[in-house]
Amino acid sequence: SRFLVVSDTHDLDYQDERSPLRRLPKVDVLLHCGDLTQNGGLPEFSKAFNMIKNVDAEIKLVIAGNHDLELDPDYELDEPEDHKAALAIWTGPEAQDAGIFFLEEGTHEFVLSHGAIFSIYASPYTPRFGDWAFGHWHHLDRFNGPDDTPNKSIATEPIPRDIDIVMTHGPPKGILDLSAFGGHCGGSNLLAAVKRTRPRMHCFGHIHEGYGTTFLKLDDPKPNRPRDGEIRITKADSNDPPCIFDASEGTLMVNAALQTGPSEWANKPWLVEMTL
Image (tube, rainbow, N blue to C red; front, top):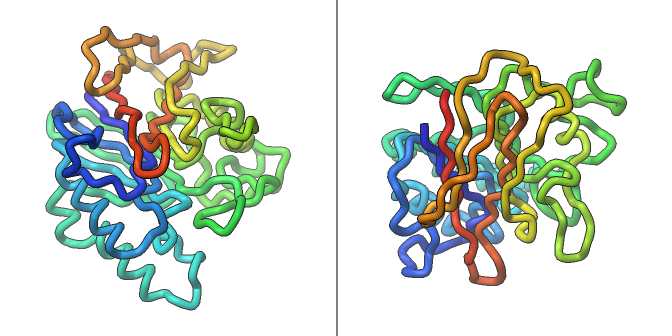
């Protein structure tokens, strides 16, 4: 099955000839890891919706990011109608007709038309900084249950051990998370959860400078469940041969942030192929 992975499109105009989302290959699944907009607002959400709708994929799975202000029900408690209107763009009849699924935090399962089944855990939350949406405190663990963390667990749906894909807006601590200011901005609780659950792929964005891929090899290569085949990854517009990994040996980590500067999107989407 083929996955196209993107993040941090930040009000990208998909009709712009420079857009990295033009002339993309057909895929089974689009994964958008959040920051659809620059500062929220219904016009930006509508623009992002049209961009996602035009990607040639059977299903398109979308989460919010910290810039997608109105999608956070707790961000502007005094303006609940704005949240409802923003959410309606992503969950209404037009979204359903386009194969768009806006994923709330938790575990979801999908069946593709060729019969492949996969599970995905989604979360828009990132370690809190500044006045942005979907922030969580570092000392509170929303990804692991109380038996799996030394911190206080606030997880209503911890990441399950049999998950195929984890899609979060932010990276785990120390993996593709180094900011321009020189600090690691990822979440330590999220890293612990990924090591505990061993998904085939963990995709995210948030830290633009962290764009890239790596393979998190497991200390104990024995999988929690049978896993067949390889995982292949390449840039979507590349003619280079893909990098190939054995899914039973670890987790493919993907930072798919496309934005590289103000009104600049020089990074390319990632194309991932895996056996489900």
